[in-house]
Length: 288
Image (cartoon, rainbow, N blue to C red):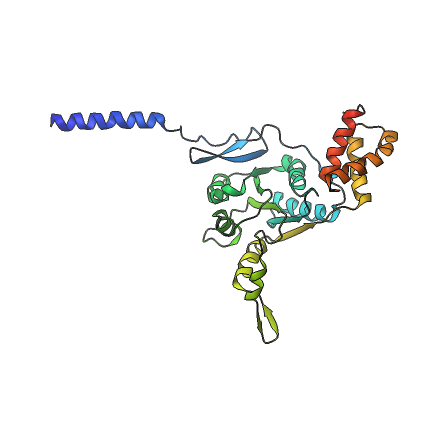
């Protein structure tokens, strides 16, 4: 009996030592600390980390994407007001404002209860845990995944499909998923997949591989496409940001040639390149 008591005592002491090495239980996020959060993994456990300084870009700062802006703003307004709304996939040319548009929506609707949770694509497998964390909250949550694309073997692919529309558990009404991607179908497409296409009764039926890849993007109810900017559009964006950085009108007009050379060197006339040029020009000419 004494041996058994000693064994129990030793086991309890060992458990205490092991417990001291384990991370403390997650007390949950501080919802008042921010309007934006990131999903972070540490020691195999995920948690929501408040973003100390959320991006302050505004909807009016985004130029030459008016149609896309109207569509996603309307969808988000419906969501914030408790009405039905769709998950959104923003695809197209790089630097045209896809991710900036999502961040601007947070600034537009944060006062009405909108919150943003940024999730890396490698952590999409944790989406069910994230949804469980926020399901009972009164706020409205956009789960945001930037630059989304998959290889066929990635585990986050199936997790995303289930959350969008395919799990036995329904997604709560206070959660939507917004994602950006340079690929319309989110996965690489190969020439040999066209060999799977069949012709039946004069109709074309894509192969199973193609159908599988298309099925993921089709689970987003709203698709928004973004296209490269022309020269005039690029210069208009440059002028906007130069004004925002306090560059006088005369200097803004004089910056035209430099703005074109900047774009030529970068190989792109995107909104991102225009913003970067304005920051450089304003810094050299006494702007903010």
